[in-house]
Length: 348
Image (cartoon, rainbow, N blue to C red; front, side, top):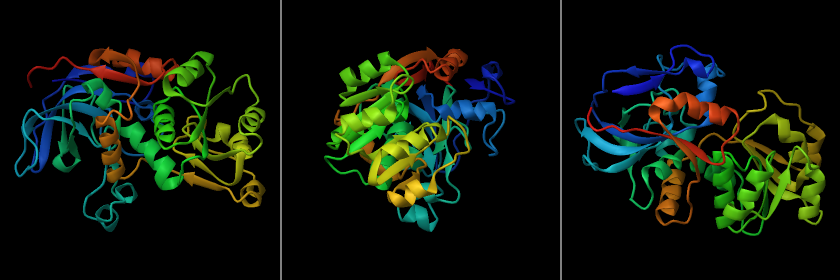
């Protein structure tokens, strides 16, 4: 089978197309023929070697897969060859107290498919059957591939961590990102007033036109604090959804009303931050880290997508062999929505 791998960390040139043996499903595993695999910033961070986390090498990235069940390993039940499926991007052990309580992202052995586990930049991939989820045909392969990681992350941030209620106000940074778009859709569906940011007027216009946001701010040109105060009649926001990191924290904390929550899931602007402790206790603000989400939340967003209440936004599609071009587009922040790799696989 064809796969895109990197054998050492570095730039986009480290991605190479290779012919590799087709994986064989073991006990309780499923072989999935990959039809589409969405990109995430984690793919870029892994390729750059940004985290001190052991990953299998040569490495196959790709957290978000939609495809067809090609073969069942021994003792697999509930799935059939030919089923359209996605693979859960977050994978707990299934045995520990956290997993058994439904809090699998707290599992000490929690891994991300396509990061600590070989992923979907390939024509075929293998996953444990409990992580392989049948999906309806209400969305195409590319849309299903664009759903799991970002909508799971956004749902966990907004509801499990942020306790969002109808009528509350949310500031969502980076409207063109996958998490940003997912959070906008879920927050609007929940009845929130949504403000979003970007450095691109074009992306902000599309967010207003296509996603129905209530207010937009160009953070390269506009004064974030001043504009939020204007849009909220001086009240500030209840939640800030931050897929950016410490580069936006100072102003995000400034626009939170008393008792507000800042939810962070990424660090694209750096791994270290300085925070005014007085700002936290004086306004009784919660600064909350969020990592993926719970399996039941993934099941929830799958149901919402199946009912067409949410729809992943596709920026562009690339053939698997063009993974370098796809990652370069993401690195250059040219995308509005998800970038997806597609394959032309017929047989293993």
